Length: 436
Image 1 (tube, rainbow, N blue to C red):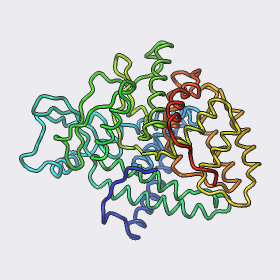
Image 2 (cartoon, rainbow, N blue to C red; image 1 turned 180 degrees about the horizontal axis):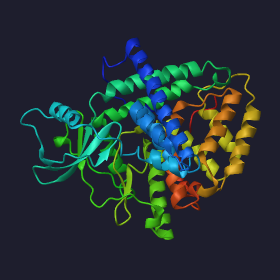
Image 3 (cartoon, one colour; image 1 turned 90 degrees about the horizontal axis):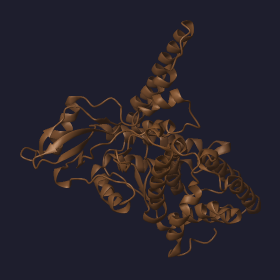
C-alpha cells in the first residue's frame, strides 16, 4: 500500500519544537476543559441545557490542528456513537472552521503567483468553505470560467509534522503497555499520518481529482482541476453549481435508496477495482446537485491500495456477503503481517467465523462497522496476529460513509450490493499470497 505523501526536506521537527508543541497541547486542553466545566456548572445552576463540552471539544480540536480535526470529523458522522448535540457541534469541523485571516491568504497567494502570473479576473474575499488545512474561495478566470480556489493555510505544514511526530511517539509508547504489545499502533499511525500529510500537497490532490473523475464517471461527479491557473499552495478547480447539503428529508424513500446505491457502488469501485480510495467522504466533501447527482469536491485525504491488499479485502468482503465464515477467517490469517508460531490458529478461526456468522446478511440498520472492526482487531490482538496496517484505509472509507448510509436507508443490504463489483474485481486477478 502506498499513501500519497508530501516531501518537504528540513521540515521534520526537533526536540525543542516537539516539547513546545506538547506544552501547547496541554495548555489548550486545560483552557477548554476549564471553560467547558464553567459552562456546565452555570447551565446547571440556571437549569438550562448545556452543550458546553461539545462546543469546547470542537474548539479544542480546531486549535490543535488538522490531525485532530480529522478525528472529530469522523466522530460527527457516527450517530451510533455520539449524541445529536455532539454530532451537530463536531459537524461544523467539516468546512466551517474559522477562515484564515486576510494577511495569511495574501501570503499564500503572493508566493503562488509572481508578478504577471495572476490568473483571476475576480477572486472573492470571503471563504465559501473553511477547513483545517485550506480555505476555498469563489473566483472567475480571465477566460470567464467560474472556479473554486483552494488556498492552503501558511505555516500549517510545520504544525502537522510536529503533531503527527508526537502521535507516532505516543503510539510507540502505547505499544509497550502489556495489553497493546501485539497491536501495530505505531505502524498504523505512520500509515494514516502519511495520508493526512498528503492533504498539504495540492499538486498531488489535483492528480487525484483527475484519476477519480475517470474512475467514478457515471457514478459520482468530481470537479476537474485547472492546472494552468494553480500554483504552489493553491489548487484551482471547476466550480460545480447548484450544490446543497443534503438530508434524508430532502428526498422520498426511493430517491434515498437510489442515492445510497449510487454512492455505495462508487465506493466499492474505489476499494475493489481502482485502488485509489477516498477516505474522507463526509458531508463537507460530499454533496448532491438538485437533480440528485452525487458530487465529491475534495481529494486531499486519499490513499492507494496495492493489488494484493485490494484482492484480500475483496475476498473478505465477498465471503462476508455470501456467508462463508470459514473462508473469511482464512483471508484474515493470510492477510496478517505476522502470525506467531505459538498462535492458536484454530481458536482464532473459530472466533472470526462466529463473528462473520452473526453479522452476515444484516442490513445497514442492524450492522455497525465500528463494533465489528473492534471485535475483529481484538481477536487478532489476543491471538498475537498482527493485522496489516494498510487495511485501516478501507475501514476508514467505510466508517465515514456508514453514518450517512444509516441516515438515508437503514434497510440497504450493503453486503449484497457489493457482490457484482466484487465478482468483477476478483474475476481476472491472481490469487492472494499464501498463508504466513
